[in-house]
Image 1 (cartoon, one colour):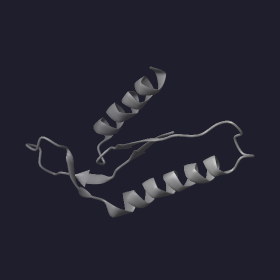
Image 2 (cartoon, one colour):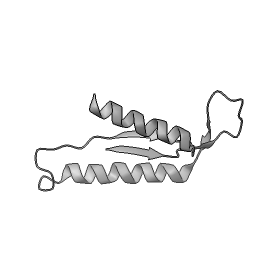
Image 3 (cartoon, one colour):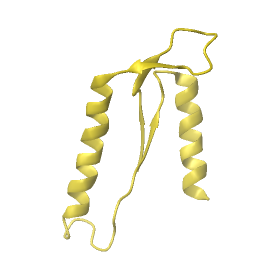
Length: 80
C-alpha cells in the first residue's frame, strides 16, 4: 500500500535545498492510522488469507509537485 502524507510543512524558503520544513504532528497521526489499519488487516487470518500487506510511506511536504513526483515513483517502484 502506498501512502502520500504531508509529514512536513513546506520550508517556505525557496532557496532551501529541501522543500520540507518542520514536522506536522497531525500528519504523523494519519501515518499511524494507516499503519494500524494495515497491521489489523494482516493480523486477521480470515480477511486476506495467504496475503500480507506491506506499505511505502512518502512525504509530500504539502507540495503538489512533490506529491505527484512521489506518486509516480510509487507506481514505477511497484511495477518493477
